[in-house]
Image (cartoon, rainbow, N blue to C red; front, side, top):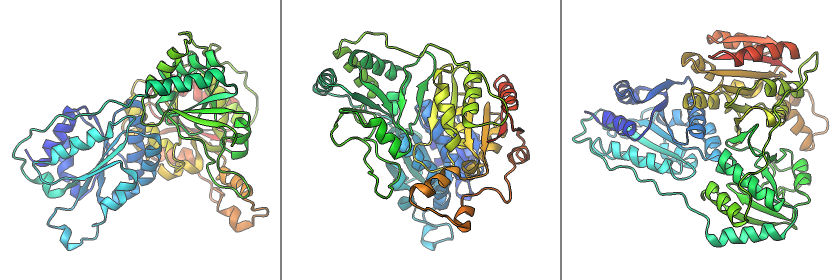
Length: 515
């Protein structure tokens, strides 16, 4: 047994069952070890941003890490943008980076780089194997670190000679993961008394506080105190639909968010940080909460949100049954061209139970989100860190984690081009994903932002940098070129027919929605 085999076998024994990979020469021993380990599904991705984005989607849905396999520092660097998003989502991810053999590093070969310097900004844990004998334990220690509540990114480096050298023993210590921190009884009482005494209060929810069971208890609290339930604008995963507790989503634009929060006297954080504007704008505040409002924390991002909400509801003597969404969606459709509202109606009417929506729809995605609040129960995943190119890979990982659930990738045309290679992986792995490409041939959000930052009369050069025509992107051709069934729709009726058909059959498909 060599070091690579001891590592891969140890990770499989501890529950790692998926590896998203884009390997190179220094990882060939790891590739061979994966070939011998049937317990880990190895998934090839054609770009490292797909690897890391898929690992994010897997981690959000499985609540455990997938393994990534990346080629030296430059390969890791290609995946950093989606690791930034994953870090904001607090997803558990285990990055395995191959490196040159230890005695080769002194020669400064072309691919030699500062892996530690690249990895540490997006890794809560970083380590380098010390020997073939210790390689398995290095991986297990990194796995344990990734499982710290609510999840984190762990990165470890495998020198090529540690992978190919014999491992004198395969034994390793079992991983130990500490229990999540719990809110103190004093904190529960303090927040309970605050909510009882005040008016115009809210629970500001994020992270694990947006899972179905945690929302159940948040609904109990709202019922007894009258507080509002407001979520982060870009959350990792939210349970929504019929039978779930409804929430408000904080508006994206600062002016709308400020108005939404204007009357608050008290804001209580649960699994989220205090809301701030996504960007700075001339003459506009960055902090969105009124200066007159008090801010308190029930459970910060490292504290068990479900436990805190449950205990707070009990402290308040709340009824066990909160108010939930009960009316199923059934919207009459309009005729003619597709807009964001009609898109939302079609999705809400057709969404199957327990679907997973990966939303990178940008300017045309909000209608779908609002109108699906009373669709069948489902999970909604968003662009947590703002680095576009997350949506398609996120869908890959979510589908690998939950193969029996339909996944819908709601994707803007410009964002989709960042990680378009994910379509190939969807086809190769026969994943049950429907991609809705919202094609307006523009970076539409940036056209809005151009005016919001004070550019009053943009010229042809500025406008050309935000335009995705000349030449047009033909997404049906792109998808078909990767082996995916694809169709283009330009009317509400055609969209309804195509989306309805895709919801009743398994496998990957793409619908190019002209909006």
